[in-house]
Amino acid sequence: MRRSYKFLLRPTVGQTIALTACLDDHRALYNAALEHRRTAYRKAGVSIRYGEQSADLKHIRAADTAGQGRWSFSSQQATLRRLDRAFAAFFARLKAGHTPGFPRFKGTGSFDTVEWPSDGDGCRWDSQSEHPTTAYVRLQGVGHVRVHRHRPVRGVVKTISVKREGSRWYVIVSCDEVPAEALPATGRTVGIDLGVASLVATSDGALLDNPRHLAACADRLASAQRDLVRRKRGSTRRRKAVARVAALHAKARRRRLDGAHKAALALVGGYDVIVCEDLRITNMTRRVAPKPDGEGGYLPSGAAAKSGLNRSILDAGWGVFLTILSHKAESAGRELIAVNPAQTSRTCACCGHCARENRRTQAEFVCTACGHSAHADVNAAINILRAGLALREAARAA
Image (tube, rainbow, N blue to C red; front, side):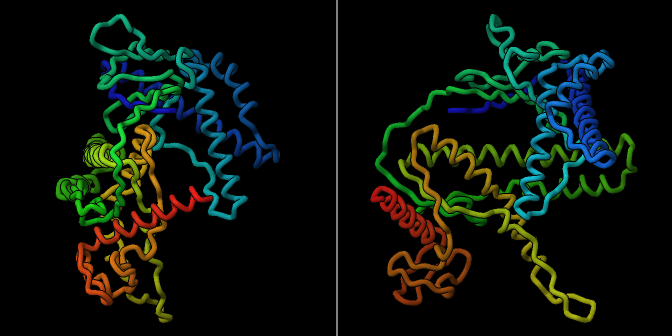
């Protein structure tokens, strides 16, 4: 199986300057290649492909030895492939009738990753393997950069990427042939329901609290954003204010990831079969469409309440949690089943009666047919488990 490892880099001041220059030069190459494609098609009706732009790299590097010529040829090819994938995705969306979204030029804040597609070609993982305590990664034009390797890397290293997040630098090592670490069987199954009040409710009756990491730092974030809007664009004080806002968001994101990893690990360690909801989070967090009243105004649409719910859903990190859960389940040899969540929160787990009135509040479920009462999310988790086991039996019978 394939796995990626993400480690914090500990570059020196000189290496930080070199990493920033590397990122800026790759961004300039991306933007120049995009302009080349746009101009060729607009003026001559010619479509430029990756192969042609990759062939031009030799001349670009020879003409700019102190700039583009410093970096790995393979990493620059990977940047051009990134642009090629953006165009391929654009034409795929156009063909499918979706909103196309033409590839855009990258600003400093929207281009944060450089990839080396092969270990040993412009980069080398564990470049000082003889060092007894510290790991290093060697990057062409940067040098041997110290890595905070908090866990061992397994498998065969294929690609290496360097990413900037705020003031921090990370290295992402992608490996093939990573051995699976199957856990011993437990003989237990569970259904899980995701929520806002509780992040996870299990069919066994357990409730995992939602930490609300973004809400916890809302006051500091609001203060930082107020400072940001008062700063003059292009000033040093504005750059510091932007860095402060980014640091607060990054801290909330790291906490959310840590909580998702711990919750997913507990589920994978305790159950052989895990049934979850097949959620369409993008659709669930879509803004409410305005309703014109025919007189130049708009009717009440509940947009403010929906906006708050959307913010809570995104703060809970359902998508991150489900992604991590699927990866951990695959690695541990567990079975993860996704089911359609429709009506699971309105159906009685005892008699099967489905009605909107069954769910009286966010947490209270009382069946209007049989009188069964339970926590609403736990009742939904039981229904999810039954639906998942039914799908499993149907798949085996087929």
